[in-house]
Amino acid sequence: MEDTITIVEYDQSWAEAFESEKEALLTRLGTEAVAIEHVGSTAIPGQASKPVIDIFVGLTPLRSVAYYESRFDLVIYTHIQTGMQGRYLFAKRTEGKWTHNVHLMMYDDLFHTRNEILLRDYLRSHPELVTQYGEAKRVAAQNANSMEAYTMEKTAFIQMVVDAARSELGLPLQNVWED
Image 1 (cartoon, rainbow, N blue to C red):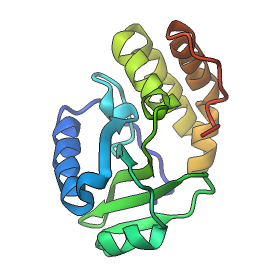
Image 2: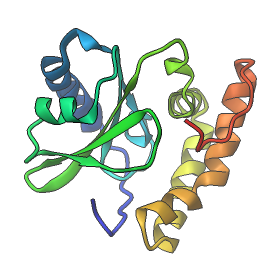
Image 3: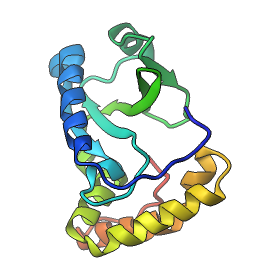
């Protein structure tokens, strides 16, 4: 992935890039892909973001990483070891540039209550928070010397939004970094 974290203004083409990748994923994964969701900041109209499309793919069943490596062109998709339980991350490069994160995970009854989906939906319905989140991301990008540091720098804001979303839906509060 990349060392420099660049935050750009929202680009309407991100929705089209998601739809195109969704079709490609359906071709590769077939009916095992029960749900494919555009998550992350590129899924939120008006949200400044890294220009990388984040995608959650809920699968039934979830197979070994080797199975998915055989389904993807490994010149384009790279499996990234993340340490996250129950999920595989593939980074996609288009013309040598990091363009997508494809997260493969088990589809279950809790799939649509994952923190990343709740964050997306809450920000979509509370546009007044979009500007605040964009500012938090810009500050995090300036202060961080790694992707992990960038992510941790945004944690307080993300936790606040996820707590509000979970409370609004009557769901128990949860640390945003728990899977």
